[in-house]
Length: 255
View 1: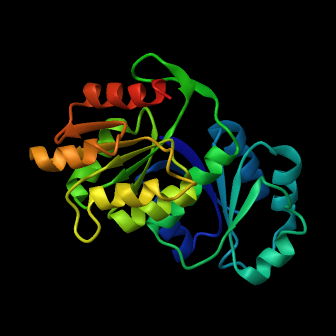
View 2: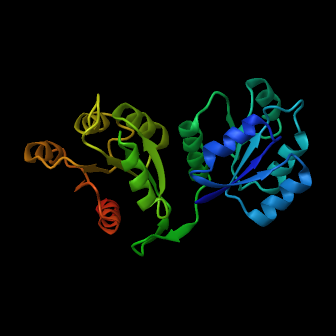
View 3: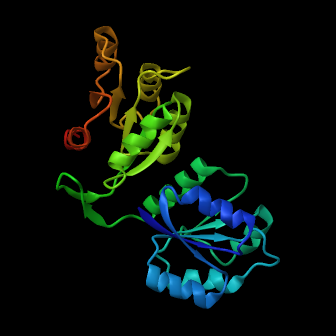
């Protein structure tokens, strides 16, 4: 799991941020004291900083200036109001800082964190099948909460995972996040997996992203209508972890 340093006044807002992030990241908390922030960054070595400026009386320019001058390679999300961001952006211009405005929920916050991490680039690491590569981002689209948790648990040590609970959400997240691969369920209410895949193939910005179908549907006719569209793979649920990772890696190796 990735390390995140959450800086802010201990208010209900910061507690909510911590609760929303703790399932997907290792969250370290720091007060707005400059010495605490410097120590936490030096010792904890976070990969992302979230600075909450909500609930404070005035903008602390010292923190922004220090982050800008001393840890420029560390991405920073600034949770703030539009008014305070106008003042803050004068100090913290450039791609290191990204504003996050309320309202937000767990999904949007998590997605923004992964986007900020990917934006800054990542160090190479060894995958579960021995391939050395940058940690890649996989979008998992499934309306079943248990399936989302199970498959995410299988893959999160090897890849970054973002979740979508339906076809429409999956398409929007694919456009916004540009994942390296999509795992797509077939049976979903509303727009099913087949219809979702058809729509993805019509959108230029995402049509070349490899798609693997993960589904409990084994009916021959339904399988063929998907295979005819040439996805990167097809696997029945529940998947075997090693076989799934091998299928994912083979999808990239064919590119």
